[in-house]
Amino acid sequence: MNLNDFFQSKTFKGILIGIGAVIVFLFIFRLGMTVGFKKADFSYKWGENYHQNFAGPKRGFFRELGGMGDRDFIGAHGIFGKVLKIEGSEMVISGQDNAEKIIIVGADTVIEKFREKIKLDGMAVDDTVVVIGEPNNEGKIEAKLIRIMPTPPPKPGEVKIQ
Image (cartoon, rainbow, N blue to C red; front, side, top):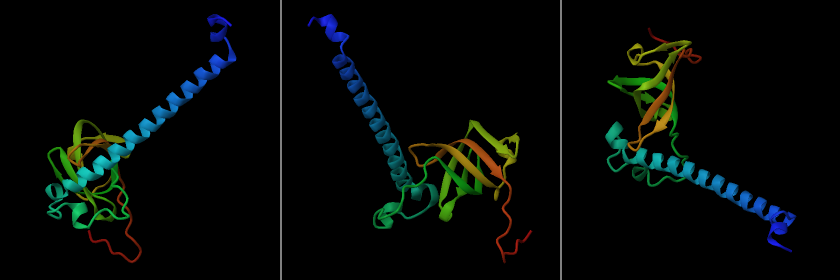
């Protein structure tokens, strides 16, 4: 068997397909590791910067609670909640379980109220918003999209004071 016959044989094609499958598998595995690392890194840095950002526990969020235990990681790429404060290009939003996050609004951030695009100065404290963005190394979210939602109706038995 000469070299030219080997390159055209089924054995050679099988070896190439096997090598290709291993490369694809390793790429997918590496991608999963990268995503997991970014999420864990954000949660860690958010906890380390909790006191600085929100005047929380002085020893850090995770240390104060005695470790993470069975808690899930903190959502790194967005939040749904009420606007608590707007200062300059940053705002604080209270989300699930009253967890507060600092959102950085950049020049390329899209802010929408219904179908209308607005600027940051068109937003107000107590607006209900959905924010989608990317975490930074300080535990803050750099917003890519902010959507102002209609004010939810009061819960049954709750009186809304105007």
